[in-house]
Image (tube, rainbow, N blue to C red; front, side, top):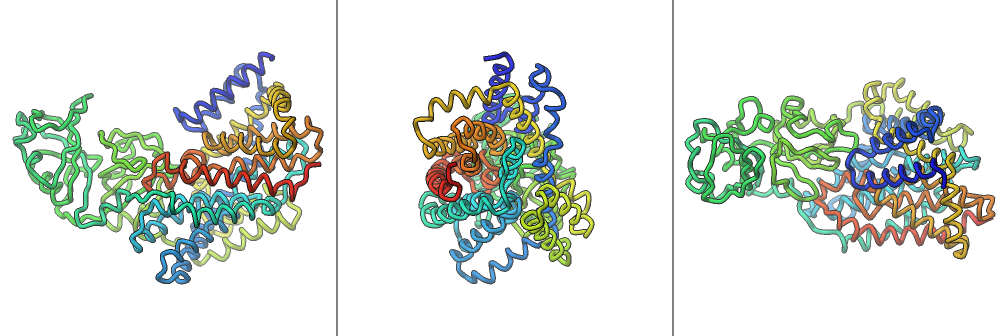
Length: 593
């Protein structure tokens, strides 16, 4: 093993650990690995930076803009409203129709955008038919992933595999070539989600569901004022300790988190995390003994003079500007005129200082404000409003133009003989020219995290190729799996890909394993790498078993009140089913030769 190979393997191992542990964001991890390869001389600058000009990066960026154009004009939201008319008063019928629509549209539109649009729809459905959101949101994520496997543009992963394959001299795939296998996989997966998954999904109410009851329970944070009559008294002697409809969750004093015992002596500056109904919190606020923290309540530090304040939930999205910032730093009151009263992560209230909690993708914030403030939240890109009206149709008169542009992109790539990156780029420009979307909205739609992740992992893939690391792995791997035969090798490749994609980014997995699949094909004496490439395609989309394997899984994690184990219980069987169906059908449509 050469020095360059050792460095590549070390970077690969470190990247895998960091992808799983999430010490930093996945894009930063990928770029750190690229930087190490540059500094150590394993990669030349031209090779390291070539990812920025890769067709896959251009295509994925353009697809973000196309999806945003469809969203901004209401072309997709119109479908949502039609579901209600078709389903009538049947909650089951509504849910099934929603799943069908999500799976179908995800074949052509970025599935993250589709799931973002449908989360409020499914939450409204849950409230309307008194169903737990946890029964509805994981299915929406899973069917969007299944739908994305049916076309070349269904997911960025498909585009990446196709792009990397073409770079290695392979013919690549057509627009609907994935559909031959994808339609069967998606159908079987859909039946599992419809018939089996409901029995495995938890029935768990989320934070906002609890607030829809008569005894609404809020969580907020207050500070004991200088000169307060409660300073020097034990907690049990104050109104806080005597009110039956109020619970002190914890007391924060400097760096200490204290248990709120009745004999705890209160001091000036103590921060108290309180849970109670609106009237209880209002009475505490009006006592004059405490002040709601400014970043939670507003400049005056008051909850307001009314207790019938509207509440809603917002969910931090993958491309949110607030990921990695604290609630205090985010400045929700200053930016949006809403107050943050609680934070929920993984179905749990965080029992610590809300203002100092660093926000993550999928976090759910319970916010308070006026209806006008909530309407202003609808157009924000940094979070999803999980309760209330769907996002307003900003340009409904141009919806038909947005649909026409999208159809032109699909038609040009399928029948016009144009490369997908050319069609996608022209389509994105058309969305701007026809004013379906503004230039600023187009830039805002592009998820730089995904693009930088692609660039970084493409560089790592290049290093594995040029250093001989990929050939080394293939040589050793081939020796181990040769006795399995092509069908066994196909299954092994799917299992490896599905395992990695459950622990790290599916895009990163696809870029890393596509060159290996091509070299494995050559070493086994086959001319056509497509069967093994499809194992990577479907394996990298089989991200059902964890909430971190796919962005849509992360998005529904908070609103559904899920735990990590919920994905394992429901998603692991689906991963196995997907693998069996894919490995059986791939050789039928793409024989080994």
